[in-house]
Image 1 (cartoon, one colour):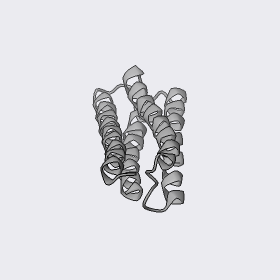
Image 2 (tube, rainbow, N blue to C red):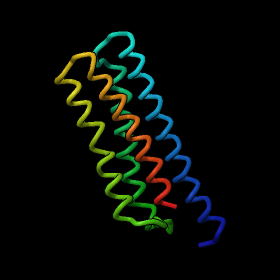
Image 3 (tube, rainbow, N blue to C red):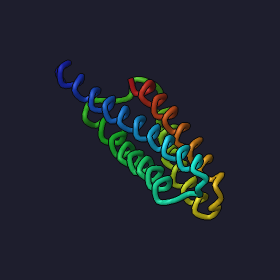
Length: 129
């Protein structure tokens, strides 16, 4: 594979990772705003958190396809997959918990979850290359 084509594959991973980080940070801000407005978990906070989860599922598919397309992880693949599996499970678990515990403080949990996922996504980008 030519150097130019490999660079384009890497850029695809980078731009999608950056989109995921931005969405996770926006989700964090939405949850902070709803907490400040003294509201419990609602369609906005749960929706953006689940959007983060759906983007992580897309990242799982990308992580499976990319090595076959000539773009393997440069770092430790086991570390990358552990981050990705845990990050994918967290938003769904947190959203379920927020549905069960409808208190206002559940939004703070969603804030922490979305921020943690943004950090984990950054780390995954570093591991990938």
